[in-house]
Length: 181
Image (cartoon, rainbow, N blue to C red; front, side):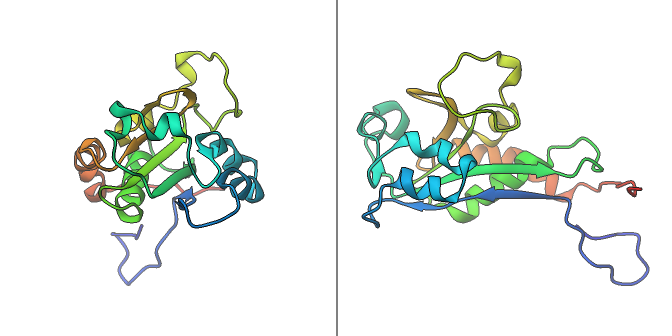
C-alpha cells in the first residue's frame, strides 16, 4: 500500500501477507506429505490430501468436487494475515483470492486452506462452527469431502472467479492506518 496523502512519493507499506506453497503433482519421487512436513507443521497439515505424489484417489475421483478432471497443481494457503493496525476490511480474503488467481492454472488447479480460524490444530475433530474461518467462504472455498478440517475448491469451476470478482472493489478502497506505538 502507499500513502495517498503524501506530498512526495512515499514508500510502499506492507500491511499483510499470504503464505502459501505450490505443489506440482506427479513431479517428484518423494511423497507430497513428506515434502510438506519438511517445510513445517503448518504445511504438514495438508499432507492428508495426498497419497504418494498425487491427490488421494477418493478425492481425485470425487465427481462433485473435481468433475472427473485431473488436478496437476495444488496451492495450500498456509497463512493469511492483515496487520492489527488496519481497520476491519475484506483485505484478507481479497489478497488470498488474488494469489489463487495469479498462481494456479485456470482448469487444473486446486486451492486449499485450514477450515479453522487462526489455522487451528491439524487432525479430524469436531469443532464449533464459530471457529470456522469465514473469510474462506468469501474466497469461494468450501468443505473438502472426507477432510473436515480443510476447505478448498478446484479452479475448473467459476466459484473462485466469481468470488474474486465480488471482492474486486477492495483494490480501490482507501484505508486509514493508525500509527503504532
